[in-house]
Length: 325
Image (cartoon, rainbow, N blue to C red; front, side, top):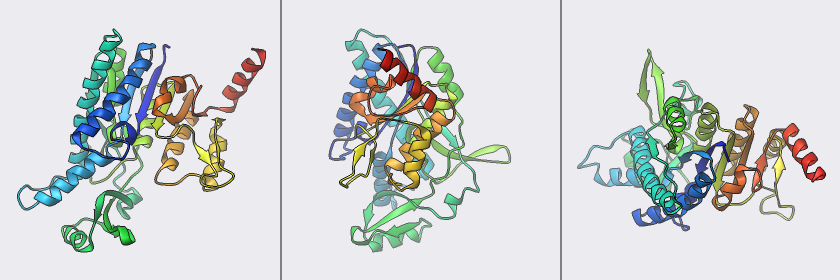
């Protein structure tokens, strides 16, 4: 295959189909996902992996709330770093077993990764990203008294909200690049990366959550990946979702996807960030970005599955080749 590829694993690769995030469910989900990643590596691709960490961070927050009177809670950036390491080890072990079954020797390494954000990002003034579980109002007010921001979601209860600032730079991308050049499969920028700001020349962690797909496209660009595959739980991006005009998107250009986004076709909390990440990657010079289900990541690298985002000239060339064939 001979391509450097970044695969952004969605939550379905980290949890059970029902969303369960017990240790057993996470281990089984990762084991299944790594079988598919191993096929990609065995075919010759240089692979870097990113992953989500929402349920895992949510579990840590619940433990902290329940044990706050015994163990001092740690800040959100610490939680992100902890989950990067935990999920990274799960992936490394599962991938090693999957590659061994294929007779492939390839080291895997996890890089606990920091993502630079702007301390003046508007997201810090008005936190909107919900994290953790729903709680009754009295529990939310107790946490608000400790300085946390919470918002009501009606009958479902209250949920903590934090900033989700724009990622500016994956600070540890050079380490990823070096490791990949040495033949490693690298797991990095989990959960979008640990958010840090630069103050007086020094870095400081902040209470925030980076969108994992926007972080993935930044890392993909920095390591010179030719393809970004965003693996989720659906095979194609849909327009007209939930209506009689619903249809899947195959090959599209960044401009076409942006037009659909302006028309409100993609939900802000789910498909919207994935579409934005894919478009940014291609607009910045990436060969292709693909949004598809985890089962199709090998075909996605070749642009043969899912919603494939490419520049118009690339699509035209593909169509010409198809006609000649």
